[in-house]
Length: 233
Image 1: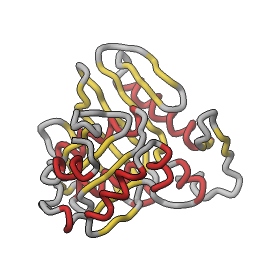
Image 2: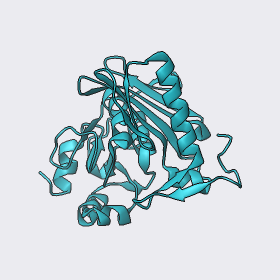
Image 3: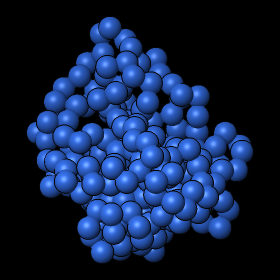
Image 4: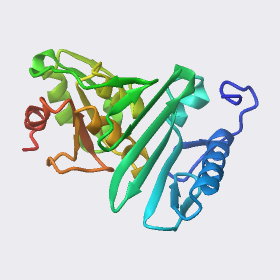
């Protein structure tokens, strides 16, 4: 937060054309140091500094998800932390301090926002659904332009909240469908427990449970019809 909207923020562009700032790197160092003090035997995988192998458990970190928002002064960005045990994501935490919000979940313990339990919507008709995705340009770049446009025509309302925030709005019941055209492991894995413990579903376009790549998330009630509307099942 101290570097958010700082006039002298140092920003670079990585090889994949995405932004990285000094704040991304500083946040990941801080998270890694905190985890090392409490869980010194656990492994860690982070977007900025790669993987340190450890025990059978692994923490997965995106220090600032939506860095493009962060560097432009848009408050919709967050730090994502997930815990993987025996190949399963069992804990997820999303902190969005500029939005004044923190979401978290653990398997069997539900999903929470700022201490209040949350759950997905009960919308069961696609023509009443609210859809969120990053942008049509991103979808087109991943070969999903036609499918997403077909889906938008079936939904009541479409907004491009993007990144982690779409998924948290889904978990809260404010959004009913999310399409993510491409996600790295650290983008999606920490979100999975929050969405699923809230009653939602995340899969790939073929309906297989997934924590990276092209994905669709829904409130569960709409999942089959969404995949059908996209022509994928």
